[in-house]
Length: 187
Figure (tube, rainbow, N blue to C red):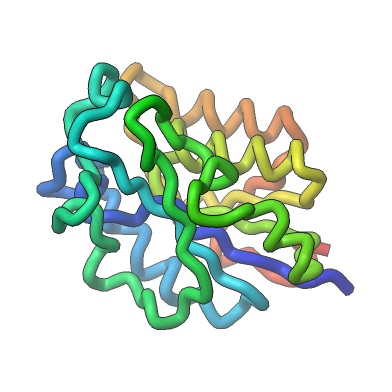
């Protein structure tokens, strides 16, 4: 049986209520994520670490700037259970939506080195970084599950989150919830 990895995507202060680019109820994912952490062989958390000036801020308000509180993980997320941290969006010329764009590690290489077959994804936001990370995980050949109750969408346009879930399902990504997640879902 293959090993599994939980990718916790961008559960950072700036994406939670009160943050610079807050996702509605973004902090609501934290208790469910914390509850499922013990189910995984490897846990990797991604985070945006943007420079103060970046092309990314022509599309979005400034957020998750390196060295700021906004770039920190949500204070209730159990970061002591996280094995590795993948930083993305660190250049002034990239967006860094996908965890596979991490600049401090070769995420796909680490997953293969650790004999990970099943990648389970949660975090923020469904319609951007979660979606892009999930789609890239499929392209890298992993079996991918997204825990829908452990994600929230930006919904810049109405139903963006629903459309993102449909796109992921169409790419062969398994959608389930943390309550029903189990061995049958990933093997």
